[in-house]
Length: 195
Image (cartoon, rainbow, N blue to C red; front, side, top):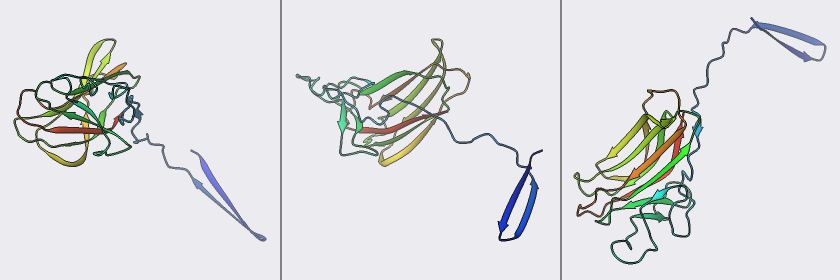
């Protein structure tokens, strides 16, 4: 057992106090953040698509139905930073963004800030996390929204823990179901993945 001694000197008075250290170290409960590429949707290419994400939006394309944005850079409805990503139903395609990246830690949950203008309970949006190890799907997490969220709200999407190993993570964000006569929008901003 370790002993801690404190010496206090004041003029000619010397005081010594000794105390046995009985405090045991406990593991840290602070989660470890796992980097997600362009997690805050701040970086966009010349075609106005989010860098490090696949998207089916093509803002600069010409000719219907492709001239609809589907996936948009939004600078007005933002939770953090200068931009968010807006997934919009253009009645032809289901908007999506998807990123795949290497990781050495197995994630426990995904945190995201979301907002939507869901116009019908027949509509839905989702965020999905898939975890792989040596090309095998080992774990996943899913959140599906079916109601309007008027203000940015924090989500914590738990990820299953069937494996302790991971080497690749895929995050997929889907907008509204295609073919529905709604013009709902789904905004996502400030993603964080944690162990």
